[in-house]
Image (cartoon, rainbow, N blue to C red):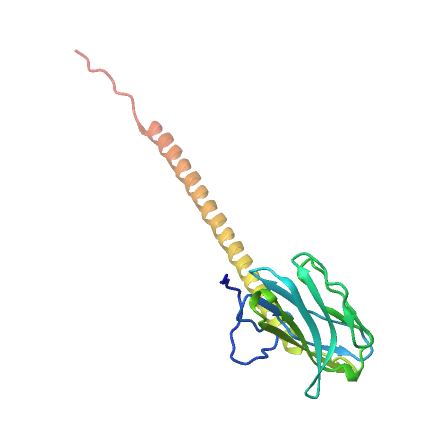
Length: 223
């Protein structure tokens, strides 16, 4: 008898139906990081679900179920023979449902066409891998159907963005003014040094000329 040991990233919970992801074995079923969707009545939506297994799969059974006030209604089901193979056939038990999964990313998502308020509720993506001795795994996706999508009030975000932008602009202006003032002071100091050197040079030349005029030639002494 062969025992398989593997570790997959998951959030452990004693509850049997953790929304989004529930896995403590080799197989992992996931309906994404955000396992819910608010959609407009009459639109078409995707219910995402993927699976992963570090020990591989063989005849992986999966299905989608809809929770109708506590009664689980099967939406579709199929079997995936092995890794890299698409399920065939996929049995559909609900109207306006299309299987859009593919073996490329272990995708077993479904599409709901022209949703109505009757489609609102919890959908469970279920999987069972015979390699795990019949262990069951599932993930829940919640669909909310509305008449019109809510308008998100971005006033606070705009105010914060404007305040941050204003602060950055003010800081940049301050730095530009500071650099300009430093540049002007540097030029003034440089000009003063040049004027000082010119004045010093002129003073030296004047002293030399004065010295040459006041000096008298010495007469030789008579013997």
